[in-house]
Length: 366
Image (tube, rainbow, N blue to C red; front, side):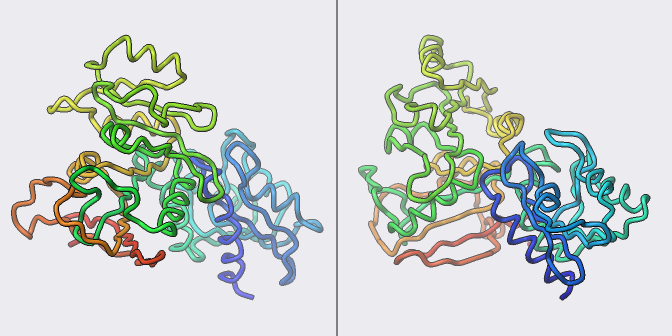
Protein backbone atom coordinates (compact mmCIF):
# COMPACT_ATOMS: atom_id res chain seq x y z
CA UNK A 1 0.00 0.00 0.00
CA UNK A 2 1.15 3.57 -0.68
CA UNK A 3 1.34 6.64 1.56
CA UNK A 4 -1.64 8.02 -0.36
CA UNK A 5 -3.74 4.96 0.49
CA UNK A 6 -3.25 5.34 4.23
CA UNK A 7 -3.67 9.12 4.12
CA UNK A 8 -7.05 8.62 2.48
CA UNK A 9 -8.04 6.44 5.43
CA UNK A 10 -6.98 9.24 7.74
CA UNK A 11 -8.97 11.80 5.75
CA UNK A 12 -12.11 9.71 5.99
CA UNK A 13 -11.65 9.47 9.74
CA UNK A 14 -11.04 13.21 10.09
CA UNK A 15 -14.31 14.04 8.32
CA UNK A 16 -16.24 12.39 11.15
CA UNK A 17 -15.39 15.32 13.39
CA UNK A 18 -17.08 17.87 11.14
CA UNK A 19 -19.42 20.10 13.09
CA UNK A 20 -18.03 19.08 16.48
CA UNK A 21 -14.37 20.12 16.71
CA UNK A 22 -14.37 23.77 15.61
CA UNK A 23 -12.55 26.08 16.16
CA UNK A 24 -10.02 23.23 16.10
CA UNK A 25 -9.29 21.52 12.77
CA UNK A 26 -10.60 18.13 11.71
CA UNK A 27 -7.78 15.60 12.00
CA UNK A 28 -7.50 11.87 11.40
CA UNK A 29 -4.62 9.51 12.18
CA UNK A 30 -3.73 5.97 11.10
CA UNK A 31 -0.88 3.84 12.51
CA UNK A 32 0.64 1.25 10.16
CA UNK A 33 3.01 -1.60 11.02
CA UNK A 34 4.26 -3.93 8.30
CA UNK A 35 1.36 -2.96 5.98
CA UNK A 36 -1.20 -3.57 8.76
CA UNK A 37 -3.30 -0.82 10.31
CA UNK A 38 -2.87 -1.36 14.04
CA UNK A 39 -4.47 1.85 15.27
CA UNK A 40 -6.62 4.71 14.10
CA UNK A 41 -8.43 7.68 15.56
CA UNK A 42 -9.79 11.15 14.89
CA UNK A 43 -10.46 14.37 16.78
CA UNK A 44 -14.01 13.80 17.93
CA UNK A 45 -14.97 16.91 19.88
CA UNK A 46 -13.46 20.29 20.74
CA UNK A 47 -11.52 20.13 24.01
CA UNK A 48 -11.13 16.36 23.89
CA UNK A 49 -8.22 14.14 22.76
CA UNK A 50 -6.63 14.88 19.42
CA UNK A 51 -6.53 12.31 16.63
CA UNK A 52 -2.99 11.11 17.39
CA UNK A 53 -3.84 10.36 21.02
CA UNK A 54 -6.94 8.40 20.06
CA UNK A 55 -5.02 6.44 17.43
CA UNK A 56 -2.27 5.49 19.89
CA UNK A 57 -4.79 4.51 22.56
CA UNK A 58 -6.67 2.37 20.03
CA UNK A 59 -3.51 0.66 18.79
CA UNK A 60 -3.54 -3.11 19.17
CA UNK A 61 0.20 -3.22 19.91
CA UNK A 62 3.22 -1.00 20.49
CA UNK A 63 3.64 1.72 17.87
CA UNK A 64 7.43 1.74 18.16
CA UNK A 65 8.94 1.66 14.68
CA UNK A 66 5.59 2.13 12.94
CA UNK A 67 4.52 4.74 10.39
CA UNK A 68 1.94 7.24 11.63
CA UNK A 69 -0.22 9.01 9.03
CA UNK A 70 -1.84 12.29 10.16
CA UNK A 71 -3.85 14.69 8.03
CA UNK A 72 -2.39 17.74 9.84
CA UNK A 73 0.89 18.42 11.56
CA UNK A 74 0.83 17.33 15.25
CA UNK A 75 0.58 20.22 17.69
CA UNK A 76 3.69 21.19 19.65
CA UNK A 77 2.14 23.43 22.32
CA UNK A 78 0.08 23.01 25.46
CA UNK A 79 -3.56 23.88 24.81
CA UNK A 80 -6.66 22.17 26.16
CA UNK A 81 -4.66 18.96 25.68
CA UNK A 82 -0.90 18.20 25.92
CA UNK A 83 1.33 18.50 22.81
CA UNK A 84 0.78 15.63 20.39
CA UNK A 85 4.32 15.85 19.00
CA UNK A 86 5.72 15.14 22.47
CA UNK A 87 3.30 12.24 22.91
CA UNK A 88 4.35 10.69 19.60
CA UNK A 89 8.01 11.17 20.45
CA UNK A 90 7.56 9.23 23.68
CA UNK A 91 6.25 6.23 21.69
CA UNK A 92 9.08 6.31 19.14
CA UNK A 93 7.39 5.61 15.79
CA UNK A 94 9.83 5.09 12.94
CA UNK A 95 8.18 7.63 10.63
CA UNK A 96 5.49 10.32 10.72
CA UNK A 97 3.69 11.34 7.52
CA UNK A 98 1.44 14.41 7.48
CA UNK A 99 -0.83 15.83 4.82
CA UNK A 100 -0.18 19.50 5.55
CA UNK A 101 1.55 21.76 8.01
CA UNK A 102 -0.49 23.69 10.57
CA UNK A 103 -0.47 27.48 9.95
CA UNK A 104 -1.24 28.16 13.60
CA UNK A 105 1.69 30.32 14.82
CA UNK A 106 1.90 28.10 17.90
CA UNK A 107 2.70 25.13 15.63
CA UNK A 108 3.78 26.22 12.11
CA UNK A 109 6.34 23.48 11.45
CA UNK A 110 7.55 23.12 15.02
CA UNK A 111 5.84 19.78 15.51
CA UNK A 112 7.59 18.19 12.56
CA UNK A 113 10.90 19.83 13.44
CA UNK A 114 10.75 18.37 16.96
CA UNK A 115 10.25 14.88 15.53
CA UNK A 116 13.04 15.29 12.99
CA UNK A 117 15.51 16.56 15.57
CA UNK A 118 14.85 13.47 17.65
CA UNK A 119 15.57 10.99 14.88
CA UNK A 120 12.08 10.27 13.57
CA UNK A 121 11.76 10.28 9.78
CA UNK A 122 9.14 12.73 8.51
CA UNK A 123 7.27 13.32 5.27
CA UNK A 124 5.07 16.37 4.58
CA UNK A 125 2.59 16.95 1.76
CA UNK A 126 0.96 13.58 1.08
CA UNK A 127 -2.48 14.37 -0.45
CA UNK A 128 -1.80 17.95 0.59
CA UNK A 129 -4.53 19.48 -1.57
CA UNK A 130 -7.19 17.22 -0.06
CA UNK A 131 -5.93 17.87 3.45
CA UNK A 132 -5.95 21.64 2.91
CA UNK A 133 -9.48 21.49 1.47
CA UNK A 134 -10.70 19.51 4.47
CA UNK A 135 -9.79 22.32 6.86
CA UNK A 136 -10.26 25.38 4.65
CA UNK A 137 -12.46 27.05 7.27
CA UNK A 138 -9.87 26.53 9.98
CA UNK A 139 -7.04 27.77 7.78
CA UNK A 140 -8.86 31.00 6.92
CA UNK A 141 -9.76 31.55 10.57
CA UNK A 142 -6.15 31.08 11.69
CA UNK A 143 -4.57 33.15 8.92
CA UNK A 144 -6.97 36.12 8.91
CA UNK A 145 -8.63 36.14 12.32
CA UNK A 146 -12.01 36.08 10.55
CA UNK A 147 -14.59 33.32 10.10
CA UNK A 148 -15.07 31.49 6.81
CA UNK A 149 -18.33 32.91 5.41
CA UNK A 150 -20.79 30.84 3.38
CA UNK A 151 -23.69 32.74 1.82
CA UNK A 152 -26.72 30.52 1.24
CA UNK A 153 -30.13 31.34 -0.17
CA UNK A 154 -32.93 29.78 -2.20
CA UNK A 155 -34.36 31.54 -5.23
CA UNK A 156 -36.75 30.94 -8.09
CA UNK A 157 -35.49 30.50 -11.62
CA UNK A 158 -36.11 34.21 -12.19
CA UNK A 159 -34.04 35.26 -9.17
CA UNK A 160 -36.71 35.96 -6.56
CA UNK A 161 -36.51 34.95 -2.89
CA UNK A 162 -40.16 35.77 -2.16
CA UNK A 163 -43.33 36.98 -3.86
CA UNK A 164 -44.32 40.64 -3.75
CA UNK A 165 -46.29 39.88 -0.58
CA UNK A 166 -43.21 38.40 1.07
CA UNK A 167 -44.36 34.78 0.87
CA UNK A 168 -41.45 32.33 0.51
CA UNK A 169 -42.51 29.01 2.13
CA UNK A 170 -41.37 27.06 0.34
CA UNK A 171 -39.29 28.03 -2.67
CA UNK A 172 -37.05 24.99 -2.43
CA UNK A 173 -37.82 21.27 -2.22
CA UNK A 174 -37.78 19.22 0.96
CA UNK A 175 -34.52 17.60 -0.21
CA UNK A 176 -32.92 21.04 -0.56
CA UNK A 177 -34.14 22.04 2.89
CA UNK A 178 -32.50 18.95 4.38
CA UNK A 179 -29.29 19.97 2.62
CA UNK A 180 -29.62 23.47 4.10
CA UNK A 181 -30.01 22.02 7.59
CA UNK A 182 -26.89 19.93 7.02
CA UNK A 183 -25.05 23.18 6.21
CA UNK A 184 -26.24 24.65 9.49
CA UNK A 185 -24.94 21.65 11.40
CA UNK A 186 -21.37 22.09 10.13
CA UNK A 187 -21.09 25.83 10.75
CA UNK A 188 -20.37 27.48 14.08
CA UNK A 189 -22.99 30.19 13.66
CA UNK A 190 -25.84 31.23 11.37
CA UNK A 191 -26.69 34.86 10.60
CA UNK A 192 -29.79 36.65 9.35
CA UNK A 193 -31.01 40.23 9.26
CA UNK A 194 -33.83 41.81 11.22
CA UNK A 195 -36.10 41.71 8.16
CA UNK A 196 -35.90 37.93 7.97
CA UNK A 197 -36.79 37.58 11.65
CA UNK A 198 -39.80 39.89 11.24
CA UNK A 199 -41.02 38.43 7.94
CA UNK A 200 -40.27 34.70 8.32
CA UNK A 201 -39.96 34.21 12.10
CA UNK A 202 -37.42 31.34 11.68
CA UNK A 203 -36.02 29.03 14.37
CA UNK A 204 -32.64 28.67 12.62
CA UNK A 205 -32.00 25.34 14.33
CA UNK A 206 -31.00 21.93 12.95
CA UNK A 207 -34.08 19.73 12.73
CA UNK A 208 -34.14 17.86 9.43
CA UNK A 209 -30.76 16.13 9.90
CA UNK A 210 -28.67 14.94 12.80
CA UNK A 211 -26.29 17.58 14.16
CA UNK A 212 -25.74 20.32 16.68
CA UNK A 213 -27.42 23.71 16.57
CA UNK A 214 -25.18 26.58 15.52
CA UNK A 215 -25.14 29.81 17.46
CA UNK A 216 -27.60 32.27 15.98
CA UNK A 217 -26.80 35.87 15.08
CA UNK A 218 -29.36 38.56 14.23
CA UNK A 219 -28.14 41.80 12.66
CA UNK A 220 -30.56 44.37 14.05
CA UNK A 221 -29.14 47.89 14.13
CA UNK A 222 -32.01 49.41 16.16
CA UNK A 223 -33.47 46.36 17.99
CA UNK A 224 -36.69 46.45 15.99
CA UNK A 225 -37.23 42.67 16.03
CA UNK A 226 -40.00 41.43 18.37
CA UNK A 227 -38.91 39.77 21.61
CA UNK A 228 -41.39 36.92 21.09
CA UNK A 229 -39.75 35.82 17.82
CA UNK A 230 -38.90 32.12 17.77
CA UNK A 231 -35.18 32.79 17.39
CA UNK A 232 -35.09 34.34 20.88
CA UNK A 233 -36.78 31.42 22.60
CA UNK A 234 -35.17 28.33 24.14
CA UNK A 235 -31.69 29.77 24.59
CA UNK A 236 -30.53 26.52 26.19
CA UNK A 237 -30.98 24.66 22.90
CA UNK A 238 -29.38 27.34 20.72
CA UNK A 239 -27.80 30.58 21.87
CA UNK A 240 -28.70 33.82 20.09
CA UNK A 241 -26.69 37.01 19.74
CA UNK A 242 -28.04 40.31 18.46
CA UNK A 243 -25.57 42.58 16.69
CA UNK A 244 -26.82 46.13 17.16
CA UNK A 245 -25.55 49.69 17.43
CA UNK A 246 -25.57 52.49 20.00
CA UNK A 247 -28.93 53.56 18.52
CA UNK A 248 -30.65 50.56 20.11
CA UNK A 249 -33.28 51.24 22.75
CA UNK A 250 -31.74 50.70 26.20
CA UNK A 251 -34.89 49.21 27.80
CA UNK A 252 -35.30 46.68 24.99
CA UNK A 253 -31.61 45.82 25.22
CA UNK A 254 -31.99 45.00 28.93
CA UNK A 255 -35.12 42.96 28.23
CA UNK A 256 -33.28 40.81 25.67
CA UNK A 257 -30.39 40.30 28.09
CA UNK A 258 -32.81 39.10 30.78
CA UNK A 259 -34.06 36.54 28.25
CA UNK A 260 -30.53 35.18 27.91
CA UNK A 261 -29.86 36.80 24.53
CA UNK A 262 -26.36 38.24 24.15
CA UNK A 263 -26.19 41.83 22.92
CA UNK A 264 -23.20 42.80 20.78
CA UNK A 265 -22.88 46.55 20.36
CA UNK A 266 -21.02 47.12 17.10
CA UNK A 267 -19.85 50.39 15.61
CA UNK A 268 -22.14 51.67 12.89
CA UNK A 269 -21.05 52.08 9.29
CA UNK A 270 -21.62 55.28 7.28
CA UNK A 271 -25.26 54.32 6.71
CA UNK A 272 -25.89 53.78 10.41
CA UNK A 273 -26.05 50.00 10.09
CA UNK A 274 -23.97 47.41 11.94
CA UNK A 275 -20.44 47.41 10.53
CA UNK A 276 -20.18 43.86 9.21
CA UNK A 277 -16.37 43.85 9.07
CA UNK A 278 -16.19 44.65 12.77
CA UNK A 279 -18.94 42.15 13.53
CA UNK A 280 -16.95 39.34 11.88
CA UNK A 281 -13.91 40.19 13.97
CA UNK A 282 -15.96 40.05 17.16
CA UNK A 283 -17.54 36.73 16.18
CA UNK A 284 -14.07 35.29 15.50
CA UNK A 285 -13.09 36.39 19.01
CA UNK A 286 -15.90 34.17 20.25
CA UNK A 287 -14.34 31.15 18.48
CA UNK A 288 -16.73 31.30 15.56
CA UNK A 289 -14.54 30.00 12.75
CA UNK A 290 -17.34 29.48 10.23
CA UNK A 291 -20.47 31.51 9.57
CA UNK A 292 -23.50 30.62 7.45
CA UNK A 293 -25.36 33.70 6.18
CA UNK A 294 -28.98 32.99 5.24
CA UNK A 295 -30.32 36.45 4.37
CA UNK A 296 -32.52 38.23 3.61
CA UNK A 297 -31.87 40.39 0.59
CA UNK A 298 -30.33 43.34 2.45
CA UNK A 299 -27.86 41.09 4.31
CA UNK A 300 -27.03 39.07 1.18
CA UNK A 301 -26.34 42.29 -0.71
CA UNK A 302 -24.25 43.78 2.08
CA UNK A 303 -22.01 40.72 2.44
CA UNK A 304 -21.41 40.61 -1.31
CA UNK A 305 -20.86 44.35 -1.62
CA UNK A 306 -18.37 44.37 1.26
CA UNK A 307 -16.57 41.34 -0.25
CA UNK A 308 -16.98 39.35 2.95
CA UNK A 309 -18.13 36.12 1.32
CA UNK A 310 -15.91 33.07 0.79
CA UNK A 311 -18.50 30.72 -0.73
CA UNK A 312 -21.96 30.96 -2.20
CA UNK A 313 -24.55 28.20 -2.07
CA UNK A 314 -27.49 29.11 -4.27
CA UNK A 315 -30.50 26.81 -4.37
CA UNK A 316 -32.36 27.34 -7.64
CA UNK A 317 -35.94 26.08 -7.78
CA UNK A 318 -37.62 25.53 -11.17
CA UNK A 319 -40.30 28.12 -10.42
CA UNK A 320 -41.13 31.49 -11.98
CA UNK A 321 -43.12 34.10 -10.06
CA UNK A 322 -42.43 37.29 -12.00
CA UNK A 323 -42.36 40.40 -9.82
CA UNK A 324 -41.17 39.64 -6.32
CA UNK A 325 -38.28 40.30 -4.02
CA UNK A 326 -34.87 40.15 -5.63
CA UNK A 327 -32.30 37.92 -3.97
CA UNK A 328 -29.59 40.54 -4.44
CA UNK A 329 -29.91 44.32 -4.51
CA UNK A 330 -27.68 47.00 -6.00
CA UNK A 331 -23.99 46.08 -5.89
CA UNK A 332 -22.94 49.26 -7.71
CA UNK A 333 -21.98 47.20 -10.78
CA UNK A 334 -22.35 49.44 -13.82
CA UNK A 335 -20.52 47.42 -16.51
CA UNK A 336 -20.09 43.72 -17.12
CA UNK A 337 -16.38 44.17 -16.52
CA UNK A 338 -17.22 44.90 -12.88
CA UNK A 339 -19.53 41.91 -12.43
CA UNK A 340 -18.67 39.38 -9.75
CA UNK A 341 -17.42 36.14 -11.25
CA UNK A 342 -18.17 32.91 -9.44
CA UNK A 343 -15.90 29.92 -9.92
CA UNK A 344 -18.15 26.86 -9.86
CA UNK A 345 -17.00 24.17 -7.47
CA UNK A 346 -20.03 21.89 -7.51
CA UNK A 347 -23.47 21.60 -9.06
CA UNK A 348 -25.82 19.36 -7.13
CA UNK A 349 -29.38 18.20 -7.69
CA UNK A 350 -31.75 17.90 -4.75
CA UNK A 351 -35.29 16.96 -5.66
CA UNK A 352 -36.17 19.19 -8.63
CA UNK A 353 -33.76 21.91 -7.50
CA UNK A 354 -30.24 22.69 -8.61
CA UNK A 355 -27.70 23.78 -6.00
CA UNK A 356 -24.84 25.90 -7.27
CA UNK A 357 -21.76 26.01 -5.04
CA UNK A 358 -19.02 28.43 -5.96
CA UNK A 359 -16.38 30.86 -4.80
CA UNK A 360 -16.08 34.49 -5.78
CA UNK A 361 -12.95 35.09 -7.79
CA UNK A 362 -10.85 38.04 -6.64
CA UNK A 363 -10.12 40.64 -9.31
CA UNK A 364 -6.51 39.52 -9.77
CA UNK A 365 -7.52 35.92 -10.59
CA UNK A 366 -10.00 36.68 -13.34
